[in-house]
Amino acid sequence: MPDALAPPTLPPLEGWVRVDDATDRPFELGPVSVVARTVVYEDAAIRERVPATADGPWRFLFASRLEIRPRTPPSKSLTKLVGKRASAGFRSRLEARGFSDVRRVESRTLRVRVGGGQRDDARDDDDRSNDAGNEAEADVIRYAATVELAGVELAADAYLAVTPVDGEFLLTGGAYPREVRGGDAETAAALREAIEPERFREELFRVIRRVE
Image 1 (cartoon, rainbow, N blue to C red):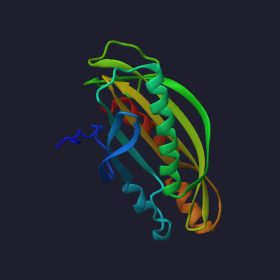
Image 2 (cartoon, rainbow, N blue to C red; image 1 turned 135 degrees about the vertical axis):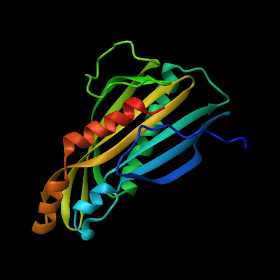
Image 3 (cartoon, rainbow, N blue to C red; image 1 turned 60 degrees about the horizontal axis):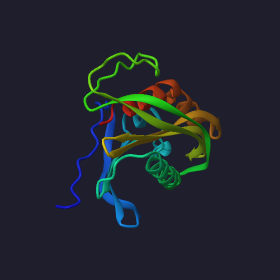
Image 4 (tube, helix red, strand yellow; image 1 turned 180 degrees about the vertical axis):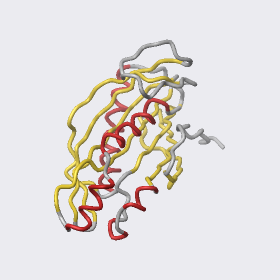
């Protein structure tokens, strides 16, 4: 099968369920095409902690493996173009899942391990110790957004990471609620108890650092 592409490999995700696994061609650049294999996960465990009326895909993550065909050596211009297209696609993904007022807040680079590296999640982002595997640099963009559940408005954070790896690209991202802004008192109280933004962020960055 000419479009066969291995899915990204993620670290173990306790309490998450995979809801999608698809291969498509997100864009073409003249004679060059891009094939993407994308897996999407939703937090299933958190649903047990909120009222059924607040059930919705409001905490999710995804990972995509992008292959450039014909194979093209990595370059700054190509990475910039892939990042621009990935950002537009991520915004569309957020909006399709009910997030609104999506706005870019900041961007940074993050050193990650690829090709078998098992980075210690307790280390600082800038740790450069000699783990197994190869080191790569991911461009990470943070977005702020709003999502509404059962009449409750929530502030949300979303992240997208673009990592060039051996002529391919890994895209990793996700979104999670950060704060209850207001709404139905009972549902809002249940959501406040379920929201753990620091843990949500740590889990997402664990995936960003360890996806292969």
